[in-house]
Image (cartoon, rainbow, N blue to C red; front, side, top):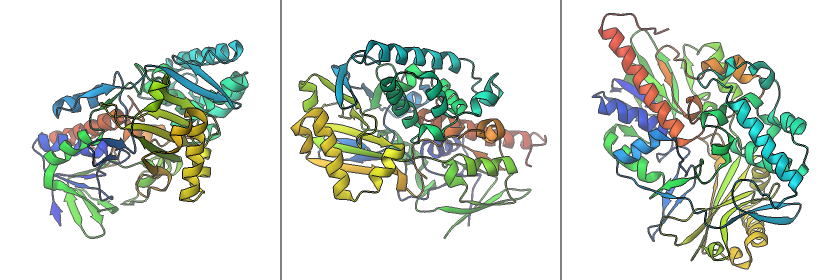
Length: 461
């Protein structure tokens, strides 16, 4: 039995941030993490030559102030994503090389249709109240239809439709038919609109931390110290009038309050006593994660740069749907990141390991030439089968979920508080959003403590 002020469940960036801020405020904390590592949906592998591979979340962008603050706190610098060259779009087997966000080398009609749709999405995003997207004027209408239905009704060009469906639905690692339009608009709005979400330069993939995401999480963990307990999947949380009892297979923590900072689909695997309020319980059931396979193909140098390419490419329906230059700040070795999401990732996952590699490398050769087929190393991370992630980088809301259950995303349930990037009204879906949620949850539990100490009545039910 460990007796502490607060117990944090989950050692991703949300849980690490909550535990860090509580410790810095002079509180005692126990952080229980199910895996044998920290980082959650980020996972940095440091290689023998000093380079690194981010197997999960990797990029940062303007406006992500909380991750920037953490980087400043621990002396972690950043470097810009490589954009000096042309990107590539493959549609109907034809390669289109272009600069900027929109592949104008497609037909003028397709490019115009694509641009007009992005402008309309941006206009719709501006009407979303971030703290309560379910209260938007058109929330009911937008939550009744999927992203797929909206795209079918508004994108007339087939190439533009394929590109948008790949780019937008891919963020939710699911088919466009699985995701509510309202959720898409909310998530985009939380980052500032589609230009930021889909962009590289000045967008969500503008830069990376030197050393990868692990360069931030490692010093956080070092400061939290012995209060971190790995390989401790939490099975049960019991709350009473005086506190909470959190149990894993071989440990028990008694605390005033608990912060649960795990993906929504994983949170449903914990037994809560007494039962959670119905809306929160149903929210766990209704916000799943999707499928994503992330691969790093490592070469002695980034040969695509010499060919005038940025390494960024997209090919709807391909086993290597998206690629992006993932080199370190030194530029060597050459690392090409392959991201395959949604139905394509599920299909790729059904192949055996050797066939997956052959299939992916063949797709890279078609785009980047023969050099792409002979990497020095090939590192694969299938998040779809990660037991304690539940799937992709972000849980999503299907139709009808936000308007019915969205209000429960951040509401404490007695002495249980919630963190995780999905619960952040700003930068929902990014590491920055996870950090914001951890800071919010830490503030919440301490505010309840202050009310109690002042002789007030905290809402514990």
